[in-house]
Length: 443
View (cartoon, rainbow, N blue to C red):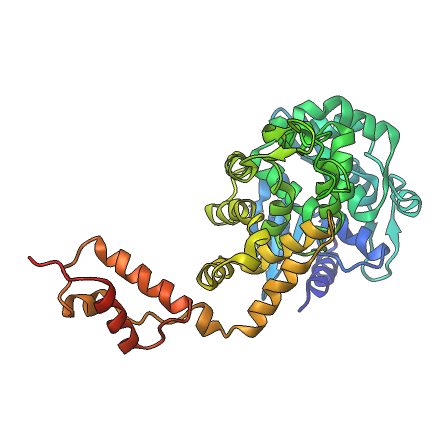
């Protein structure tokens, strides 16, 4: 059963029990836009207890807010009771929830008009109490009622407004955008995890450039990622970066990110040059150029700090930092020893490193020679040569008369170097290499 089929089943089952039930929110918006909804929500006048009696296997994940999850196979549908909310002391959750009997009361508590539409799943008739269909047609993101009140209820809605405007290529209505600009500093009251997740969606929905331009114009960017704001106006050597400053370069890269792409790649693109502002060095005289000495090392540390601040998982933080740390190494690939190049392409998720380099080139000098060099190397080099099996182990070294010690690592590393460079390829080769290069230490 698909998510849509499950949502329709839920509505029909609730209606058969004499309750009201409608598809609601983003799924209705997407259906009207001829897009496939990511998920489906149902709104009903049945209370959470009544919903659970009808669907005994449902999950009461948010029953205090009137939300029950109905599951079937791998699909899930959120069922929310019509309600009005009273007070938002924590800037996220209502202090008090009052269940209501009409869908009109329910939609007035939602964020934006285009997300407050209801649909009868049997007739596809739309209930619109807030002008959402008109705003959909006009391409406008508009807060329901007083924008300031909507954003005070949940500050994250400010970034969500930016994300929806970017994703759908819509404009944000003037009063709504003005409220975001006035309240931008309060976004820091939102948990780091929620900000991270919303920014990640912004980066991976196919409209990252527009999203970050709007974040900047709204004043939100300087609050959530001041390091990115600081790239504005940081000039670069025109012979390598004819496109302009670091901000412009970053925007050009963001513009090329595809919808549904890797989250860590997207963050790597955003942060790859974050170390340039603090390392900017102007030309020292005629014939010199702008330099960013150690910007990779500085940027890697900054990326690690940003990932820690936004509470990324260790795995994602390590990959994002690695993307920043290694992005300049591609300039050296034609001169790398074979062993060095093999170790380079063995980096975890190397496809992301290669794609970041491609985007970096296309957003600056547009020279893809090194990118193509690496692609040819990967195509022409068998995987077993890039990651060859170990020819000797520590037990082999002991059998050859070597005593266990930190020297084992030196010997095994030298063996791998010779193997990667094609000097040895068999067990016997390895034994002869060790015997000719190292002498067992007598006890």
